[in-house]
Image 1 (cartoon, rainbow, N blue to C red):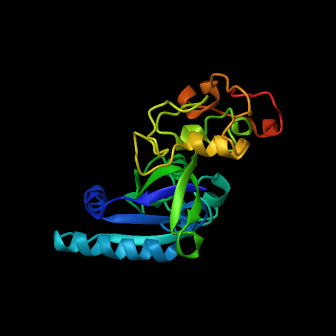
Image 2 (tube, rainbow, N blue to C red):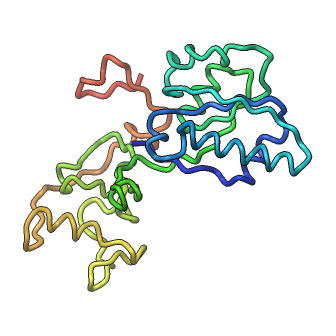
Image 3 (cartoon, helix red, strand yellow):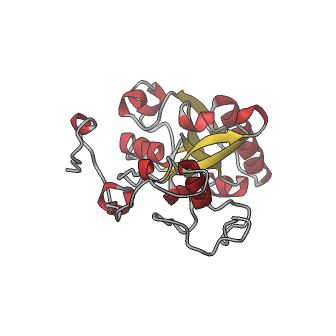
Length: 233
């Protein structure tokens, strides 16, 4: 699940003040589950933005549309409001960063303002109802080695990204020295492999970062999703 957080209200207001007619695009997939992209959340935020703009002496028209997904052109083509030429000054997107860019590709004539900060790929890990806390679980390295680390992504959960064992600076109680609130992820991994703490998963080789976002603009052909060989052409 792509996890995003709402930008501060002051920042949103500063971004939209130069415009008068703004199309507000919600996204009803990943970020909605995370609590920021759904219709109710969008309406609450838009009402706060309108009020803040009014206090600054500006009257801004914001119209909300509902999109199932912003990151796929097929869904954008189904929104007639997006096809209206000359009707809007800007778009305010309540989608992830990929959705923001897809909207701009669909309407290159309009600036698209992100209402959210895209944070990480994560999952709910507890709290009341099981969804009060979301935790980073993946960085999208493109070269997955979870089978060697007890099915735990050390790139996402270890502050130092240690891939073949702990750094050795954890406390005597097993807490991370970078973030003492965290248990050393390698203690968790060792316990998963054997009660005595002996790791037997295997050696993790150096990452091929060309498969990830760190390798630049990575592309994968749709007919290669089930092909073990990567094709980024």
